[in-house]
Amino acid sequence: MAKDQELTILAIETSCDETAIAVVDASGGLLLPKFRVRANIVSSQIKMHAPYGGVVPNLAKREHIRNLPIILKQALRKASIGNPQKEISAIAVTTGPGLEPALWTGITFTQKLAEEWRLPVIAANHMEGHLVTPLLNARVSKVAFPTIALLVSGGHTQIVLVKKWGDYTVLGETVDDAAGEAFDKVARMLELPYPGGPEVSRLARTGNRYGFSFPRPMLQQKNYNFSFSGLKTAVLYQLRDLTEQKTPFSKNDIAASFEDAVIDVLMTKTMRAAAEYKARSIIIGGGVAANARLRSRMRDAVKKEKQGRALYLAPLSMTGDNAAMIAASAYFHAISNDFASWKKLEAHANLPL
Image: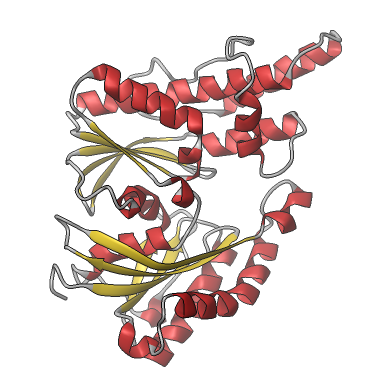
Protein backbone atom coordinates (compact mmCIF):
# COMPACT_ATOMS: atom_id res chain seq x y z
CA MET A 1 0.00 0.00 0.00
CA ALA A 2 1.12 3.59 -0.63
CA LYS A 3 2.78 5.18 2.38
CA ASP A 4 0.32 8.09 2.51
CA GLN A 5 -2.74 6.24 1.23
CA GLU A 6 -5.95 6.77 3.16
CA LEU A 7 -7.15 3.54 4.70
CA THR A 8 -10.26 2.58 6.61
CA ILE A 9 -9.39 0.06 9.30
CA LEU A 10 -11.78 -2.04 11.32
CA ALA A 11 -10.09 -3.02 14.58
CA ILE A 12 -10.98 -5.65 17.17
CA GLU A 13 -9.70 -5.62 20.76
CA THR A 14 -10.38 -8.43 23.28
CA SER A 15 -7.16 -8.65 25.27
CA CYS A 16 -8.84 -8.54 28.68
CA ASP A 17 -12.38 -7.75 29.81
CA GLU A 18 -13.36 -5.04 27.30
CA THR A 19 -15.00 -6.11 24.06
CA ALA A 20 -14.18 -3.37 21.58
CA ILE A 21 -14.55 -2.71 17.85
CA ALA A 22 -13.68 0.51 16.02
CA VAL A 23 -13.72 1.90 12.50
CA VAL A 24 -11.00 4.48 11.86
CA ASP A 25 -9.96 6.43 8.75
CA ALA A 26 -6.19 6.85 8.65
CA SER A 27 -3.92 8.86 6.36
CA GLY A 28 -0.73 10.91 6.29
CA GLY A 29 1.85 8.14 6.56
CA LEU A 30 4.53 7.87 9.24
CA LEU A 31 5.41 11.56 9.24
CA LEU A 32 1.99 13.20 9.58
CA PRO A 33 -0.49 10.50 10.59
CA LYS A 34 -4.09 11.61 10.87
CA PHE A 35 -6.94 9.58 12.30
CA ARG A 36 -10.69 10.05 12.15
CA VAL A 37 -12.60 7.77 14.50
CA ARG A 38 -15.88 6.93 12.85
CA ALA A 39 -16.93 4.41 15.48
CA ASN A 40 -15.37 3.23 18.73
CA ILE A 41 -17.64 0.84 20.61
CA VAL A 42 -16.54 -0.59 23.96
CA SER A 43 -18.59 -3.07 25.98
CA SER A 44 -17.41 -3.29 29.59
CA GLN A 45 -17.59 -6.43 31.73
CA ILE A 46 -16.93 -4.66 35.05
CA LYS A 47 -20.22 -5.68 36.68
CA MET A 48 -19.67 -9.32 35.77
CA HIS A 49 -16.16 -9.52 37.26
CA ALA A 50 -16.79 -7.26 40.27
CA PRO A 51 -17.94 -10.09 42.59
CA TYR A 52 -14.59 -11.84 42.00
CA GLY A 53 -12.46 -8.73 42.59
CA GLY A 54 -10.68 -9.23 39.26
CA VAL A 55 -11.02 -10.54 35.73
CA VAL A 56 -11.94 -14.22 35.36
CA PRO A 57 -10.50 -15.30 31.96
CA ASN A 58 -13.15 -17.86 31.02
CA LEU A 59 -15.97 -15.48 31.93
CA ALA A 60 -14.31 -12.79 29.82
CA LYS A 61 -14.04 -15.25 26.93
CA ARG A 62 -17.73 -16.15 27.14
CA GLU A 63 -18.80 -12.51 27.14
CA HIS A 64 -16.52 -11.63 24.22
CA ILE A 65 -18.07 -14.41 22.16
CA ARG A 66 -21.54 -13.12 22.98
CA ASN A 67 -20.76 -9.43 22.47
CA LEU A 68 -18.60 -9.39 19.33
CA PRO A 69 -21.39 -9.89 16.73
CA ILE A 70 -23.54 -7.30 18.49
CA ILE A 71 -20.78 -4.70 18.72
CA LEU A 72 -19.75 -5.28 15.11
CA LYS A 73 -23.24 -4.36 13.92
CA GLN A 74 -23.20 -1.26 16.14
CA ALA A 75 -19.79 -0.16 14.87
CA LEU A 76 -20.66 -0.65 11.19
CA ARG A 77 -23.94 1.20 11.66
CA LYS A 78 -22.32 4.13 13.47
CA ALA A 79 -19.56 4.36 10.85
CA SER A 80 -22.14 4.19 8.05
CA ILE A 81 -20.45 1.15 6.52
CA GLY A 82 -22.89 -0.56 4.19
CA ASN A 83 -20.52 -2.88 2.33
CA PRO A 84 -17.55 -3.84 4.51
CA GLN A 85 -15.85 -5.79 1.71
CA LYS A 86 -15.61 -2.64 -0.40
CA GLU A 87 -15.45 0.12 2.23
CA ILE A 88 -12.93 -1.36 4.67
CA SER A 89 -9.26 -1.59 3.73
CA ALA A 90 -8.07 -4.04 6.40
CA ILE A 91 -8.99 -5.74 9.67
CA ALA A 92 -6.74 -5.35 12.71
CA VAL A 93 -6.93 -7.60 15.76
CA THR A 94 -5.03 -7.63 19.04
CA THR A 95 -2.94 -10.81 19.27
CA GLY A 96 -1.17 -9.91 22.53
CA PRO A 97 -0.22 -9.28 25.20
CA GLY A 98 -3.27 -10.21 27.24
CA LEU A 99 -5.32 -13.12 28.53
CA GLU A 100 -5.05 -15.94 25.98
CA PRO A 101 -8.67 -17.14 26.23
CA ALA A 102 -9.83 -13.56 25.65
CA LEU A 103 -7.36 -12.91 22.82
CA TRP A 104 -8.45 -16.04 20.98
CA THR A 105 -12.06 -14.86 20.82
CA GLY A 106 -11.04 -11.75 18.89
CA ILE A 107 -8.70 -13.74 16.67
CA THR A 108 -11.29 -16.38 15.80
CA PHE A 109 -13.88 -13.69 15.06
CA THR A 110 -11.39 -11.86 12.83
CA GLN A 111 -10.55 -15.03 10.93
CA LYS A 112 -14.21 -15.51 10.04
CA LEU A 113 -14.57 -11.90 8.89
CA ALA A 114 -11.34 -12.00 6.86
CA GLU A 115 -12.45 -15.12 5.05
CA GLU A 116 -15.95 -13.78 4.43
CA TRP A 117 -14.93 -10.27 3.37
CA ARG A 118 -11.61 -11.28 1.74
CA LEU A 119 -9.70 -8.49 3.45
CA PRO A 120 -6.07 -8.32 4.62
CA VAL A 121 -5.38 -8.73 8.32
CA ILE A 122 -2.98 -6.94 10.68
CA ALA A 123 -1.80 -8.58 13.92
CA ALA A 124 -1.74 -5.75 16.46
CA ASN A 125 0.21 -5.35 19.69
CA HIS A 126 -1.92 -4.10 22.58
CA MET A 127 0.93 -2.06 24.11
CA GLU A 128 1.71 -0.38 20.80
CA GLY A 129 -1.94 0.62 20.80
CA HIS A 130 -1.49 2.40 24.14
CA LEU A 131 1.73 3.95 22.81
CA VAL A 132 0.07 5.62 19.82
CA THR A 133 -3.13 6.67 21.62
CA PRO A 134 -2.08 10.36 21.94
CA LEU A 135 -2.34 10.54 18.13
CA LEU A 136 -6.10 10.13 18.50
CA ASN A 137 -6.15 13.61 20.02
CA ALA A 138 -7.10 15.95 17.19
CA ARG A 139 -4.68 18.58 18.54
CA VAL A 140 -1.67 16.25 18.11
CA SER A 141 -0.53 16.48 14.49
CA LYS A 142 3.08 15.38 14.86
CA VAL A 143 5.19 13.81 17.60
CA ALA A 144 8.73 15.10 18.12
CA PHE A 145 11.22 12.21 18.01
CA PRO A 146 12.99 10.72 19.78
CA THR A 147 10.33 10.38 22.46
CA ILE A 148 10.18 8.56 25.77
CA ALA A 149 6.93 6.71 26.40
CA LEU A 150 5.63 5.73 29.81
CA LEU A 151 3.11 2.93 29.32
CA VAL A 152 1.36 2.23 32.56
CA SER A 153 -1.65 -0.04 33.04
CA GLY A 154 -3.01 -2.87 35.14
CA GLY A 155 -0.77 -5.45 33.53
CA HIS A 156 2.23 -3.46 32.35
CA THR A 157 4.55 -0.65 33.37
CA GLN A 158 7.23 0.18 30.81
CA ILE A 159 9.52 2.98 29.74
CA VAL A 160 10.12 2.87 25.99
CA LEU A 161 12.49 4.79 23.75
CA VAL A 162 10.72 5.58 20.48
CA LYS A 163 12.97 6.79 17.65
CA LYS A 164 10.12 6.68 15.14
CA TRP A 165 6.85 4.82 14.78
CA GLY A 166 7.71 1.13 14.69
CA ASP A 167 11.20 1.60 16.20
CA TYR A 168 10.83 0.78 19.91
CA THR A 169 13.36 -0.08 22.60
CA VAL A 170 12.03 -1.07 26.03
CA LEU A 171 14.39 0.59 28.51
CA GLY A 172 12.75 -0.81 31.61
CA GLU A 173 9.65 -2.52 32.91
CA THR A 174 8.13 -3.89 36.07
CA VAL A 175 9.87 -6.84 37.71
CA ASP A 176 6.73 -7.79 39.66
CA ASP A 177 3.44 -5.91 40.08
CA ALA A 178 2.52 -3.32 37.50
CA ALA A 179 1.42 0.09 38.81
CA GLY A 180 -2.23 -0.49 37.97
CA GLU A 181 -2.13 -3.89 39.60
CA ALA A 182 -0.71 -2.33 42.78
CA PHE A 183 -3.55 0.23 42.79
CA ASP A 184 -6.11 -2.57 42.54
CA LYS A 185 -4.49 -4.60 45.33
CA VAL A 186 -4.34 -1.62 47.67
CA ALA A 187 -7.99 -0.93 46.86
CA ARG A 188 -8.88 -4.43 48.07
CA MET A 189 -6.93 -3.81 51.29
CA LEU A 190 -9.00 -0.66 51.81
CA GLU A 191 -12.19 -2.61 50.99
CA LEU A 192 -13.01 -0.40 48.02
CA PRO A 193 -15.29 -1.50 45.17
CA TYR A 194 -13.95 -3.00 41.94
CA PRO A 195 -12.28 -1.71 39.81
CA GLY A 196 -10.17 -0.37 42.62
CA GLY A 197 -7.64 1.91 40.90
CA PRO A 198 -10.06 4.79 40.21
CA GLU A 199 -11.48 4.42 43.72
CA VAL A 200 -8.04 4.83 45.29
CA SER A 201 -7.50 7.97 43.24
CA ARG A 202 -10.92 9.30 44.22
CA LEU A 203 -10.09 8.96 47.93
CA ALA A 204 -6.61 10.38 47.37
CA ARG A 205 -8.00 13.69 46.15
CA THR A 206 -9.04 14.62 49.71
CA GLY A 207 -6.28 12.79 51.57
CA ASN A 208 -3.06 13.96 53.21
CA ARG A 209 -0.22 12.89 50.89
CA TYR A 210 2.25 13.22 53.75
CA GLY A 211 0.16 11.23 56.20
CA PHE A 212 2.19 8.05 55.76
CA SER A 213 5.77 7.45 54.65
CA PHE A 214 5.70 4.69 52.06
CA PRO A 215 8.80 3.49 50.15
CA ARG A 216 9.67 4.56 46.61
CA PRO A 217 10.93 1.21 45.23
CA MET A 218 13.95 1.29 42.90
CA LEU A 219 13.78 5.08 42.74
CA GLN A 220 17.54 5.56 43.17
CA GLN A 221 18.59 2.68 40.95
CA LYS A 222 20.07 3.86 37.66
CA ASN A 223 18.06 1.41 35.55
CA TYR A 224 14.50 2.04 34.35
CA ASN A 225 12.83 -0.99 35.91
CA PHE A 226 9.97 -0.80 38.38
CA SER A 227 8.87 -2.80 41.41
CA PHE A 228 5.61 -2.10 43.23
CA SER A 229 5.24 -5.32 45.20
CA GLY A 230 7.21 -3.93 48.16
CA LEU A 231 5.15 -0.76 48.20
CA LYS A 232 1.96 -2.79 48.22
CA THR A 233 3.33 -4.86 51.13
CA ALA A 234 4.26 -1.69 53.03
CA VAL A 235 0.63 -0.54 52.80
CA LEU A 236 -0.52 -3.96 54.01
CA TYR A 237 1.78 -3.84 57.06
CA GLN A 238 0.78 -0.25 57.83
CA LEU A 239 -2.89 -1.18 57.83
CA ARG A 240 -2.19 -4.25 59.98
CA ASP A 241 -0.28 -2.20 62.55
CA LEU A 242 -2.93 0.49 62.70
CA THR A 243 -5.64 -2.11 63.18
CA GLU A 244 -3.74 -4.04 65.85
CA GLN A 245 -2.95 -0.85 67.76
CA LYS A 246 -6.54 0.33 67.32
CA THR A 247 -5.22 3.61 65.96
CA PRO A 248 -7.80 5.70 64.07
CA PHE A 249 -6.77 6.44 60.49
CA SER A 250 -8.16 7.87 57.29
CA LYS A 251 -8.41 5.70 54.19
CA ASN A 252 -8.06 8.91 52.22
CA ASP A 253 -4.63 9.54 53.76
CA ILE A 254 -3.51 5.98 53.01
CA ALA A 255 -4.72 6.32 49.41
CA ALA A 256 -3.07 9.71 48.90
CA SER A 257 0.27 8.64 50.41
CA PHE A 258 0.30 5.45 48.35
CA GLU A 259 -0.66 7.24 45.12
CA ASP A 260 2.10 9.81 45.51
CA ALA A 261 4.68 7.08 46.15
CA VAL A 262 3.74 5.39 42.86
CA ILE A 263 3.70 8.64 40.92
CA ASP A 264 7.06 9.75 42.36
CA VAL A 265 8.66 6.62 40.92
CA LEU A 266 6.90 6.79 37.56
CA MET A 267 7.62 10.48 37.08
CA THR A 268 11.23 10.45 38.27
CA LYS A 269 12.27 7.54 36.09
CA THR A 270 10.46 8.90 33.05
CA MET A 271 12.07 12.32 33.37
CA ARG A 272 15.48 10.73 33.94
CA ALA A 273 15.12 8.65 30.77
CA ALA A 274 14.04 11.71 28.79
CA ALA A 275 17.17 13.54 29.91
CA GLU A 276 19.54 10.64 29.27
CA TYR A 277 18.25 9.94 25.77
CA LYS A 278 17.78 13.62 24.89
CA ALA A 279 14.12 13.05 24.12
CA ARG A 280 12.28 15.87 22.42
CA SER A 281 8.99 14.70 23.89
CA ILE A 282 7.28 12.38 26.37
CA ILE A 283 4.24 10.16 25.80
CA ILE A 284 2.00 8.87 28.61
CA GLY A 285 -0.39 6.03 27.74
CA GLY A 286 -2.28 3.13 29.32
CA GLY A 287 -5.13 2.87 31.80
CA VAL A 288 -3.24 4.60 34.62
CA ALA A 289 -2.67 7.56 32.28
CA ALA A 290 -6.19 8.57 33.30
CA ASN A 291 -4.90 9.34 36.81
CA ALA A 292 -5.40 13.07 37.32
CA ARG A 293 -2.49 13.37 39.77
CA LEU A 294 -0.07 11.69 37.33
CA ARG A 295 -1.17 13.92 34.46
CA SER A 296 -0.89 17.07 36.57
CA ARG A 297 2.53 16.25 38.03
CA MET A 298 3.93 15.27 34.63
CA ARG A 299 2.74 18.58 33.16
CA ASP A 300 4.39 20.46 36.03
CA ALA A 301 7.63 18.46 35.74
CA VAL A 302 7.97 19.07 32.00
CA LYS A 303 7.19 22.77 32.42
CA LYS A 304 9.62 23.19 35.33
CA GLU A 305 12.40 21.45 33.44
CA LYS A 306 12.38 24.20 30.78
CA GLN A 307 13.90 21.95 28.11
CA GLY A 308 11.20 22.60 25.54
CA ARG A 309 10.03 18.99 25.59
CA ALA A 310 6.49 18.33 24.44
CA LEU A 311 4.17 16.18 26.55
CA TYR A 312 1.62 13.99 24.76
CA LEU A 313 -1.10 12.51 26.96
CA ALA A 314 -3.57 9.86 25.85
CA PRO A 315 -7.08 11.37 25.62
CA LEU A 316 -8.93 10.59 28.85
CA SER A 317 -11.69 8.81 26.95
CA MET A 318 -9.15 6.43 25.37
CA THR A 319 -6.76 5.64 28.22
CA GLY A 320 -8.59 2.35 28.83
CA ASP A 321 -8.61 -0.58 26.42
CA ASN A 322 -10.31 0.33 23.15
CA ALA A 323 -10.16 -0.62 19.49
CA ALA A 324 -9.47 2.86 18.06
CA MET A 325 -5.93 2.70 19.44
CA ILE A 326 -5.51 -0.73 17.83
CA ALA A 327 -6.59 0.71 14.48
CA ALA A 328 -4.11 3.58 14.83
CA SER A 329 -1.20 1.27 15.58
CA ALA A 330 -2.25 -1.08 12.78
CA TYR A 331 -2.11 1.76 10.25
CA PHE A 332 1.68 1.97 10.57
CA HIS A 333 1.94 -1.74 9.80
CA ALA A 334 -0.49 -1.51 6.89
CA ILE A 335 1.42 1.22 5.08
CA SER A 336 4.55 -0.92 5.46
CA ASN A 337 2.70 -3.90 4.01
CA ASP A 338 3.17 -5.75 7.28
CA PHE A 339 0.15 -8.04 7.04
CA ALA A 340 -0.50 -11.43 8.60
CA SER A 341 -2.08 -14.57 7.21
CA TRP A 342 -5.49 -14.80 8.85
CA LYS A 343 -5.10 -18.59 8.90
CA LYS A 344 -1.92 -18.33 11.00
CA LEU A 345 -3.02 -15.77 13.60
CA GLU A 346 -2.15 -16.83 17.15
CA ALA A 347 -2.60 -15.40 20.65
CA HIS A 348 0.53 -14.47 22.58
CA ALA A 349 -0.14 -13.70 26.25
CA ASN A 350 3.32 -12.17 26.76
CA LEU A 351 3.87 -10.60 23.34
CA PRO A 352 6.73 -8.08 23.62
CA LEU A 353 6.47 -4.58 22.19
